[in-house]
Image (cartoon, rainbow, N blue to C red; front, side):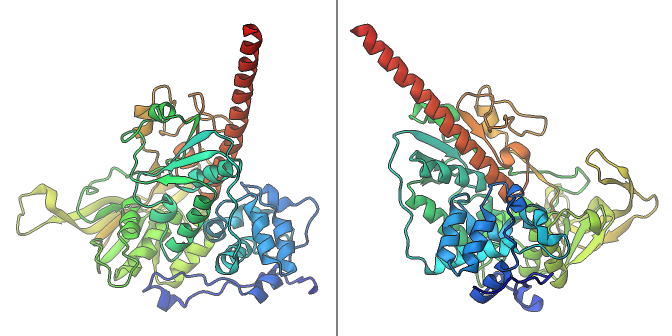
Length: 488
C-alpha cells in the first residue's frame, strides 16, 4: 500500500476552462482519476473517534469507505457508502461537505480537510461506469408505504424502506422522477443522467414511481390510506417562491428562480440549439446569494445573457452559497453587486399596445446601497439602507432567488395536519406529523435547505416508520392470538 499523504492541501478537482464552460451545460467538475482518488484517500488519518461521521446527516461510514479506496477496492467503497446513502453520486456533487463532514475533519485543523465529497463522487461514478453487480431486491414483508415526492428526502425514505422489504410507491407531481434534483439543479452541476441512474437503482430494489400524480388533487393523503398504505411520508419540497413585494415584480421578464430553473431543466434548454422559450441575450439581475441564485445566474449566462449580475444585500462574508459555486460564478464572469438591495423593477409598455398594463416589460432595476448594522435574530449583521444612495442597473430580466415555502395544497386537503407560520409541516424528532402514521421531512418541513439535510430527514422517517409498523403489526398479532384463545 502507498505511504500516507501528509500534504496540507487536498488534490485539486479538475474543471472545464471557465471561458469554455460559460457557454455550455456540460458538467463543470470533471472528477478524480483512480490515481488521484487513492492519493487523496491517503490523506485520511482513519481517526478512531470518526468526527467526520458526526458531521454527516446520513451517517456514512466515511473512514471505512476511504480505507477501501486506499486499497483500490472501489466497489467495496461504494457498497459501504450505499449502506447509509441511497444517492451517493448525487451527494458527491451537491452536498455542502465543507460545512458538514469535512468541517469536522482533523486534517482541516492545520491545512485543508480530506476531500470527502470528491472521493464519494469518484466512488459512485466508478461503480456506475464499471460495476456489473445488480441491487438485490429484498424479500417482501407484505406491508405498503406511500411516499409523496421524489426529491432527495422521498427517494432516501423510499430506498431505506425498500431495503427493509416494504412495498414502496413514490408519487411525483411532475413527469420526471427526481424532484428538485432534476428540475432545480442545472445540468452543469448535476447531470440528469446521474439522477436517472440513482432512480434506476431504487427501481431495482422494488421501489415503484408514479409520475403526474399531485397529492392533494389527484389523490389525497386519506385516499392513500384507503388504498391500503399503512404509512405515508410527505417529502413534497418547498416549491412556492417568495417575492419581495416591490413595484414591478409583475412585469414580463421577472421570474422566480424556481420557475426559471424549472423551465430550463424540464424543457431541456441545456441541449444544443434548444427551443426553450426562456430568454436570449440582454442583461440579467439575480436577486439573492444562495446556491439557487448561483445556479440561476450561471444558467442565464449559458442561455446567452450578455451580462449577469448577482444582487445581494449583505457582503461576501455573509453570502450563503457554497464557496466553490461562488468562485465558479466569478471565474465565468458573473458580476457581484454586494451590499445593495432592489427597491423597484422599472418597466415599459409594449408600444404596439401601450394602454395594456399587463404587457409591461423590464428595462431596469432601481437599487439602494446597504451597510451592515447590528446582528439579527440569527446572529448575522442586519443590512441597513444608506439614505440617498439609490442607483439603477440596466437589465432586461430579473430573477428573484430569495427563498421558497412549502406548497399549501397537501395541508389544505389533509385534515388535522398542522403547519407552522411559514407553511412548514410540524413534525417531532422522528418526522411524525400531527396525523397518525403520516410522516414528513425535507423542505416540506424546514423550507428550502440542503439536499443532504433532506436525505437525513428521509432516513430518520424511514427508521421511525419501520419501528411504528413493526409495533403496530405485533399488536395486531397479539390481538389475533388473544381472539383465538377466546374462541377456544
